[in-house]
Image 1: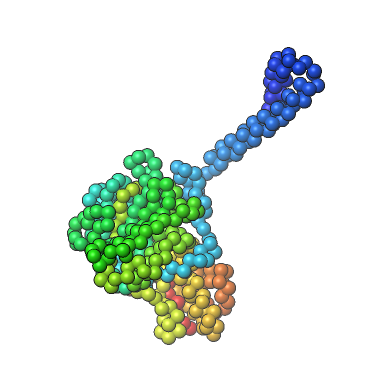
Image 2: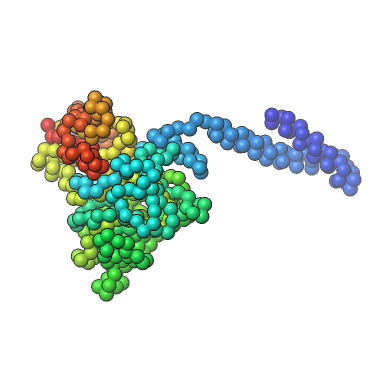
Length: 418
């Protein structure tokens, strides 16, 4: 094809040269040299363009892959799920006791989710791009946890979020707010709602930012604001982000996927500030797997002294034994304990909730335990001979399998000292 294009362009430019420059300069060799230079440049550009377009067409013809590998979106093909190694600086470890969890599995598609309230609207949806159910909202409104949260000094918040098109026909961004409310059952309005708050936001063009505030005279001049201008940290439409927030008294840290975006040692310097609600607002997004857990787990003491760790910070793809990269922080902590205590051997035991067939859950729990062992060997260099694995499926629940929060308690990995 490239030769055919070359011949066509040669004929055109030689004809053009013979009817313009030739009438002025006349020497045939000079004209030929000029025509050839133009020809070579134009032909290379044309051929490159055709070949590039052909490559794009070939990419479009590739079969779509599922959410576990590559995901086809309106803006292109999403990269494969990142490996755990990419999370090497990710030190987030979830709290040890789940106090709130919602994956919207108990809600009907098309309904407003039962555990939330709003001054606008939202609905539970499914997506061909991502697994599970999602709460979708769009517009200038807020959706908040209906019941107040009893949060101690140390707790973690996690959720999956996908920025989507808003009412303007483009990505609209979104806001997330952790706040101390005034109205227990109603909307706290204003730019700085409630008694105090921490706001994380993604602007319509993807830039992340934050704001803290404490209302009243006591909180004057204590507010903080900022944003991240690094293009690598900008969020994009139709891409999934795992947001992790770690609160330790006055300190607030926030991660988006493997990147730590915010670390504020004195976000809330007043002991009177006690957060009790989360809400999403102002923009357009899909949200799922909202998880709030309390406590600052002392894994080292629990394993060495008490002989057992129950981890809720090791995540898997739905109904699979594929570890999610946000498990890195918890796995790294386990590896550190084993490296510091070379004589310790452990048994890794997987547990599931009661959804699905008993035999399938038992098999899944065994495969997940094996996957954890393999990752500790491969990524962290732990001797395989120091680890045994087992799975109990749904046979040893720690809570009733009646609602998402309790099911989340039953989905766990235990590390038992041998």
